[in-house]
Image 1 (cartoon, rainbow, N blue to C red):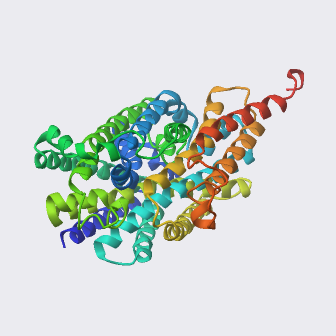
Image 2 (image 1 turned 90 degrees about the horizontal axis):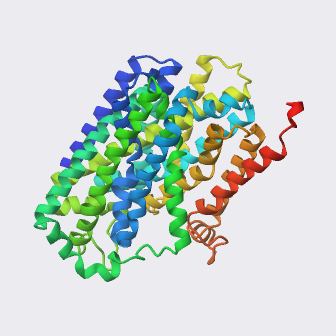
Image 3 (image 1 turned 90 degrees about the vertical axis):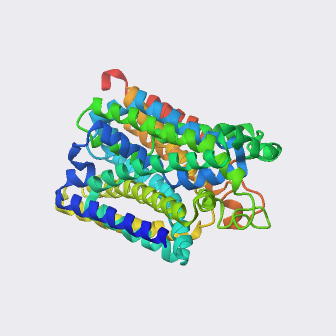
Length: 489
């Protein structure tokens, strides 16, 4: 009952924020970038709220249950990615962009094709990441209300469309800020309860000592060196290419505020990840190891994504379970709003506006923005139903891999290599997009389960290590070979 009350209160608060944001203005600037009036500190909290998704709260904690210390890649790589974002892109991005990543790419390379490419990659990457959030939300609501998974993800999809179509970026920003504060507080409270229950950190680690050979020694995730390197690279540089994080830098007034945003978000994400990895992950192994939380097959009831919820139920009963469920749900709502805004703005500002040869009015563009939000919600619901049994940390890692293979190389070359041509950026980016998605499809997580083939055509789950160098190489070669002689330029 407490869980249901917390859930309803969360939905009401987010809808009130959306209604307030909707009354602040419905022009393009308000919907796309909150008018550019968000402070650096506020945007830092919003970035951390946008990044710390269902993957952080549900997926990675669940992976710790089966993979042990090997999940450290999921915790450290994003911190390294935020450091790269601060050093390489935060300032230049704010200086060059207005609404979307397409604005940045075409600032120097005036190419309609490149803007279309930016819109396409934004939508594809956002859908991959949105899929993970929808699976997490569906699992959470289905367990809380004892309803079918399809109905649960449909509710999330409807809420997502309302937030974006009515409140835009301003509503999403404040939902993300509220969610970030709630998440940090909740994670710290759970960690304290776990340490009290285990009589301190020494007591906690002594309880999981018998599991050392199974889960705490290296190799728990069954990664070979190439797979581990590919996952780490994808998670690190892929974060720099995630569209829903990049567009947050357009919400602040100047470059200094953009850099402040990354410093604040890095601090918040770092604290949460350290607590999750050193305390909450081991606590799941220490406490959630038997019925009714674990079945006869040794797997968690409800799937690996339910690990932290089982821990909350065991330590704090229905009250803590309800609070964690509500916070996890607010986490998902904040992220799906950001992802949908990134996709819808790319569809309207980059794709539709380019196809209309810049002839569309602002009213028409905003109509496309809202329609795209609804369509994307429908697609996300359908994909979530298909992949509902996948671990959401794995699904999110795929989004990072595609972002690393497409947006990251093109963005870095646009900002730092003056010899890059529009053709080089376009052909290289498309090569990275097609190759990364193609290798995921023929890889072990899709080719076997979906196409019922025993042996995948590509043996690695994460393709970033193999595709990122190819994207850079194609961009550079096409730019050099296709460049006109100096006297003709």
